[in-house]
Length: 214
Image (cartoon, rainbow, N blue to C red; front, top):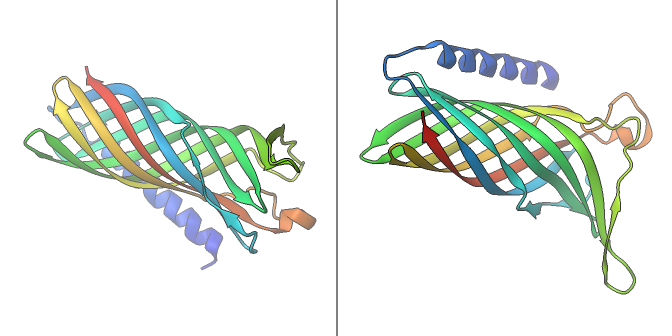
């Protein structure tokens, strides 16, 4: 089985599991809405060595909606404004993107704590990108990056994570760790030259959110 077929099978499996969790309606159903902010460590994986290094970003903020259909199973979705990127050859490339993660969330309640494990999918659109580098005087310069025809703005991938919520009814303070791995190439693989270096985004995110039950 090729890598692409394995990725498609994984996406279909995750979609099925997310749909199953959303369809289980229970009398104890709960709805939550809130905001979140986090720090991310982002990088790329590539088919050829690019001497890339991960970068840190404080821009990973957004809205969160969570639905618990029963005692163990729930669904969480959101809209995030996020930075992605990497550093290579003393130049940092940062992408500004909008992300929509949707995950199945399994949870266990212990006193006023809720332990969570989650997995699912995300979709994203890259709004723009900047390049940062040091000039001859050591000053940091920033320029707007111009996208080439073979570069893609759309992205999607898998999400795996875990978390802990402190339940202060009707408020929950939620701490999460999530790992995003892109399934789409950042360039069209049919293009020659730079497009032949297959790159994908990956991102580790540590975040805190405040949600209100309604």
